[in-house]
Length: 479
Image 1 (cartoon, one colour):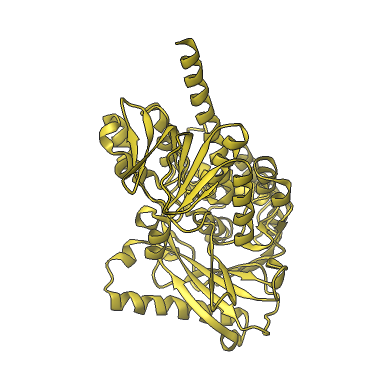
Image 2 (cartoon, helix red, strand yellow):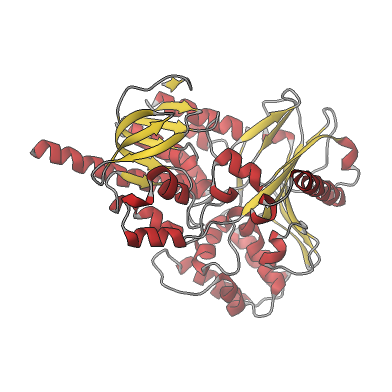
């Protein structure tokens, strides 16, 4: 059932899910299919979290917000936990390009092609390349290795900043990983990404989320949007429900799909957790944020095929500081051709994404904020002109989103586009050990971020919630 934002919900539930990102939605769908009563609460006026879209010029332009592209594993996840119809709309991108002062490369982003490029383009021996990929393949979550991404690349490709750029730059845009993060955050994510290319949902994010919403309702999930949860209620070290606009909704379990720190310190309150857990949670670092520039092409105009994803940079070398710089030396273009939404009139759009620091935006005056927005818009158009000469003249809509925009619409603290750093995963996964019935399924630890990581984390936590509810049922039966 889809509740209006003004309705007061009087039912009680097995589980309430706070936040309708892909983790929360997937968890809700799985639990409902397993026979649990589920309420999904979303503060925004649409589902999807960071997997979202918006329309401009009376619907003439539709823009997907997330940088498009996810691993082949999304097909299996959607087929198993959503529907065959959703899975069948996931198609492979044709071309991923790199254009920077160190090299130009075009790839289909498969492991086989990366091996070929490393050997033929970068001159690395076959033995070294195979050893590198073997190490990635053998990495797992339970490794205690302290090796960083930077140390991993230096081990196999010493002094080769160009190779580091080739291997890491896409993942920086996909989940905020950097040279200082643990190598496992790169090995697990990138080896999955590279296995069989990069994929996109044909029909657009709007169609995918609409299909998911319909599936949720069909399976019995109750949904209310524009329902911001003020508090997650705890009584005697057990969750008992949530408070929305002063109204209490009861449940046996609560799953937060919100930012990890917001969940602990704002919605629950650190007084309900042990001192050691609070200390760990305080030490969790938030990941970086991002900027996007949305460019719509005039109706009737077209652009040539220049690749689906184009990683561009004017920086002479690769570094974490440079890729986060407000000077926007690096940006990635997601190019949307008519076959992205074949059910609509032929339209073209381009979205530029650049990584950013929240701190570089939050202290700007309103005047300086608008000046910086105009700057990133001009950087995007000028960068796109180098790939598609003359494109400026056929752009009839342009706007920009900043880390402040991300914070406003997702409620992620400091506009953290990719959740938390790696240490956040341990805190997230063990939250239910602190408070019975309280679980978290947000974007954490880099591994559990991005579309596939978020959806799969929702599945993992759904199993944990179901186990908890089953134990409660046994306790009630015994008593």
